[in-house]
Image (cartoon, rainbow, N blue to C red; front, side, top):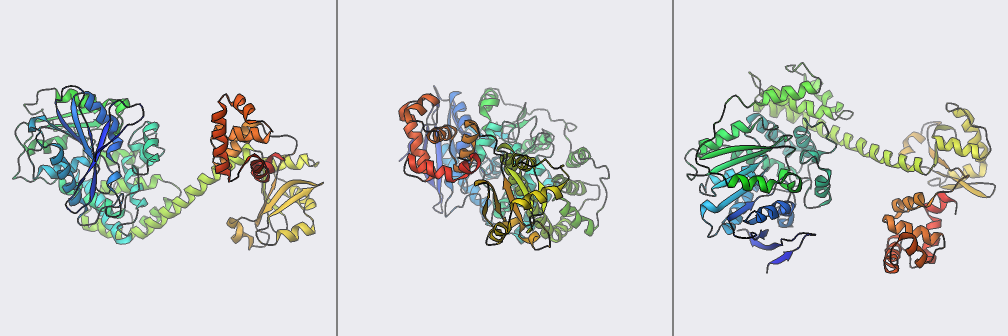
Length: 615
C-alpha cells in the first residue's frame, strides 16, 4: 500500500510505493499531485549515485507550477538497492541495459493515459544518456525533454573514461567500491573550479547542499568498478544515434547548464549536443545558462529555482529550430590546453617516456594536482592532429594502473594521517597538553610549547627552544630507574608522579615501534600538563563532546553535575525546562555508559577530564 512521507516544513506530501522490474527487483516510486489544475505529468530522473528524494524540493516546485510529478529510484540507487541490487553497483555487461529497462517501466507507469503533448522529462547528468537510450525505441516519449548538465558527446572524454574503466576492471573486482576512479572522475570534472575543497564540490557551491548529500548514506556512496564501467559504456553508446529513428514531430529539448558547470565545461560542449538532438528530429532545441549552477543544479532548487526555469520554458511555443552557430563551441583540445596552462604547463605536446610516466604516478602522493595534469595530458594527446589511439592508450593504462593504484593508496594514507594530525594538534593546543617524543633513555627529540610551559611550572628555567639536551636532562631528572623500568613493560603506560601529584603520562604508540628499534631513536611519548590553571566550563564541555560524543547542551549538563549542581540548577543555567534537563541526563548516561549521577562523576574524573583538569 502507498504511504505518505512528510518532510519537515513541507506542505506538499510525497506519496511512495513500489513497482517491480521483470526480474523481480523492487523499485521505489514517488509521486506528488499538482497544485491546482494539472497542466501535465513531469517525470524526474535522479543523477549518478543519488536517489529521487534528493530531488524532493524540485519535485515540489514543479507541483506548485501545476505538474503532476513522478520519480523512481533505479536499481542500485537509493531505496531501490538491496541484496539483489547492491547500492552503487552495476553488473558488467548488463547493468546499463537493466537501468534503461527500469526507466522504461517507471515512465510507462507514470505516463499511462497521459497524452504525449502533456508529458515532460527532466533528466540531470546520467539521466540524460538514459533518456537517449529510451528514445531509440520510444521516439514519442514526451513532447518536452529537459537535460540538466548532461555528460557531453565528446569522443575524447569517452575514450579517456572507457580506457580507465577497462583498465580498472582488470585490476579491481567489479563489485568493489572504486575510490581511485571516483577520485579521478571528480578531480577531472572539478579541475576548473578555484574553490574546490572536496570532490563533491562539482555538484554545488552551496556547502549546505553538499553536506546533506554527504550525510545521506544512500546519496553519495562510492560506486563500484562495475558501476563506472557500465556508466561510461552506456554514455558512449547513448550518443551513437540510430539514424532509422526520428523523434515525434514537435519534440522540444532544453539543455540547462551552469555558469560554473564542469559537466558541460560551463556550456562549451552545448553546441555539439544541440546539433545531435536536431539530427534526431527535434523540432526545437534550446539552451539555458543558470548563473551559479554546477552539475547538481536539479537538487539546488531553493537557491536556483530550477522548477520555475523549467516551467517558464514549457510555457513557450516550440515550433522551430533554434539557430545553431558552429563557432560558439570549443573542443576538448581547447579545454585541455586551458586547464594545463592554468596549472602552469606550456609543453603540451611533450611525449613522456615509460619511466617518466611511472615517476609521474608517484608524484601524485605529494601533489594532488598531478592527477589532473595526467588526465588532461591524455585528453590533449587524444585530441591532437595525430591522436593517441585507443589501443595505445589501453596499453599505457595496463602498464601504469598498478602504479596509479599504489600511489593513490599512499596518498589516501598520507591525507588521512595529516587530517588526524591536524585534529589532534588542535586538541593538544586547545587544552595545553605538553607533548615530547623521547627515546628509551628519555632523550627528547621533539617537544611542543606546552611541554616547555609545564617544565617551567615544575620549577625549572625555560630551556631555549633548540636546546633539547637541557630538556632531556630535566625529563630524566623526574624519570628515575623504577619509572624507566616500568615504562619498558608492555605499552609503557605509566603515570608520572611528582610530589605526590600526577603531572604526566608515558606511553609507546604503535607508530613509533619501527623507529624504537634504532639506537636512540624515538620510542615513546611523554605528556606533561601545566598545573597553574584550570579549564573553564566551555573547554571542559568541549572535551566531553570530543571524548564521549555528547551534544553541546549535554556536555554543559554533565559539567554541571561535576560541579555539584542539581538538575533544577542545571535547568536554570541552560535556560531549559527540568524535563529537558532530565532528557539530557538520560542521554548522557547512555553515551558514557553509566547508571546515574554518582557513576557519571566517577567515570568522568577517571577519564580525560579528570586527568587534564586535575579533579
